[in-house]
Image (cartoon, helix red, strand yellow):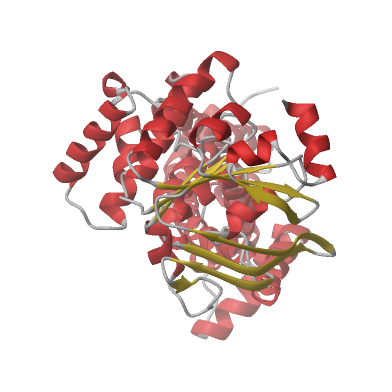
Length: 218
Length: 240
């Protein structure tokens, strides 16, 4: 087998651009997904059953259907509906954000509910409002417990952003497929792409375990 | 100071408190004893509305806490509570545990809160632990910090929910000593406890609860030496 390093070198600028787009998509989706997820997670633990309901439907839908389907719905349905035209980057960020928000919501919910209820009672018995107790007592403790599962979710998000290739978002996987199509070769584009994803996910894991170590003191 | 009128509390179909009425006066120390499941902890938790009240009236410091429009947070600032499981905030130092509520709830300056906290730590004999985390303390020390934390809000009433039940036997004394001092200073206290010795020595009145009712209440010497009800006699024969 003749491994064509020359073709990889030729495609290197595209892979580089694609990697930047992948990082951009992931960061965007992490940011939006986390904020949206916090909101949905808090909604899911509301006292009132009717307030909880739409939030738990949301989580059920986005965790129970394939991201692939969600991506196509957003790209061909939601985005044209909102801005009148398709846009691969926007659709990818929206679909990934909506999807990861569902998983992140569950991480927040589990994190908050894992804190002993005596903590809330102690805070309330001192005269704190529910909001103050959440902010100063529950969330700081819950956040620490959320870091490892959130890290996993971010790693998954980077990998799943590759599905955006199907809607022609010029991210890393898109360029891998383009290279395959142009030269009818398989190993060179996809091993390169796989290696780059691995570098991205490993770097993120390292960063997160560093953060985790920093926050476990005290 | 606290008036309880026909208090009832149910969890679903289970009625835990069935018509409790009691008056607690200023500076009075009341101990609540009784077998497990008699509703004594639930009764205590109704006094600062940690449990929703099913029926009846509870008036604390002249305010009816069963009134849904009442700002319960205001009432709770004047009612300190100490829990069996301590419930210290593990992510905060001992000092921060004590100063958190005064700073955030009452808006006391950090400096003032720190001074007050150090004074309280001295009182409970833990001055040297100010910068420790709760995980570094023994059970008895944790409970003394919890008492200091509640006192930092300058409460008029202190509620104790089995404060020594989760402690190793040799640590019970240090917590009871702090509570005795507090009683001697004239704090109004309601103490759910299994420490019969403490009830005898410190309380002005003992309430014996069973099956969601107050079976008997009296001065400690009368209740322990001369119980009127069969149920009280049976209980005391097992614990004394």
